[in-house]
Length: 544
Image (cartoon, rainbow, N blue to C red):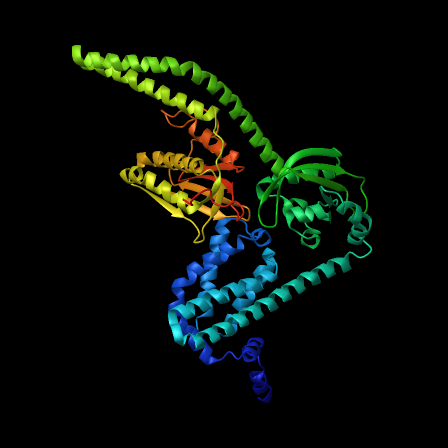
């Protein structure tokens, strides 16, 4: 009985922390009382928090994409709801410890935990002052204490998980002492780490025994994360694993000794990189010796540049052709248009035959269409110089909404905007970027018109050095995901000229951005990037 009484009096770690910061039942009641006033601000605070993270490349790099950021924002709203819940027991303590473990798993640098908590403290404190006025002081004290507790628990959990990682590293080093890992570190590390290419050493079982600095940097993985694991399972995307597994198996079996081919690599954050691998099998050694070297070059950027160059060459060649044709065709067309107009007036006065008038009208319409095509030829062949200035993406989206509202409404289509609360400023030619947006939005509306309903979303997100803009619709999609939609004269519309998206692509690339499309039934998304404005550029005249 005495032992049980003693055990019941043993203070838990969480109770000790609460006693240290003087967090008591009055604080718990104050936080629960604050919850109804603070809850309407949670979504805004979460969005502002992640917009701030987007400004920092080191923190932004741990994200796998927009879907993950949206999940994290929802989790943050749930977390803020929990810290004001009024219930602070051992289950609460364990939930907070999980957050620290997640930070270690995704590789978020620890200093962001402190700065993030400071941002949240300011935001929630401002809510308390604004909504509760003079009586806010007790809530602010309670809020300060619970956030101190949260930070203390997260840091402790972060430290424990890092210690476990370090222990694992020590275990690997101890187990491998005077054998494979020690040999790799002693014989290869200095020389291999100086190589700019990825160098991965694989043993006779296909397991990683060597992982140089370039491999660690490109993949975001440390040696202890991949040591002793299969090459294919560790750094190859799932879709490419069957092919790469067969290749590795054949090389380890002895045929041939050297192979070079293109492949893929997946990073710790889930990004896929284009690679050119050179596999070389060496003489068989001891069981855990490296018998196969995979030397890789990251060609992601060079592939993108090559694609862009090919596209630009095609556009330049077609532009030259278009200019020549336009000059040759424009004068005869103008003459034909005048004579058809004269013929139409004569028919209306002297020979009002419906069939003849209709035929003349068809000819006139076709001449107008050809004239429009010639004008687009010239726009395509002779792009004007960019006149750049700082402009807010939110303002551009507003203009596009105004210009497309009537057409969308008549077709039963809703056009929505999804932008962060902070102003996103790009350094661009306002008229030309507006032309890009209008072209894509109008294409989306036309694709949705047969259904009589649908939704178009204009979305913008900040990245460290540029703004990514997406125009998404829930229409039928492109005929094929591989359709060359940016090639001149390619069109999915019966009356289309096939120059609209080619011109759009040229405008984006002239700005130093990139453009692409993803399409499947029910979702088509055109996305492009534009470099951000900065404080030194200034607005050219008044801001729009």
